Image (cartoon, rainbow, N blue to C red; front, side, top):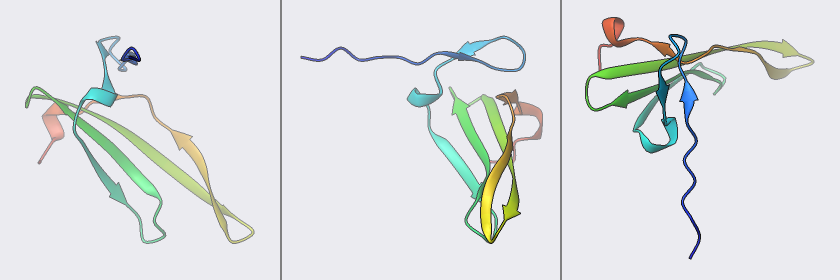
Length: 77
């Protein structure tokens, strides 16, 4: 039997959570690039990462990735 590995990270407020154990919702731009990765913990706490991209020689490269930010106040489900 293999042991289950939990990956615990901190959000921008320093609160630890395991994003791999939570449901996610994603948004994408017209080019198929992921713009947001949102996870919901216990139906109440919402954390979100955002991504930006630049086009270089007709290829989209990830330019930035935010920390996990508590987005509970702005979540619209």
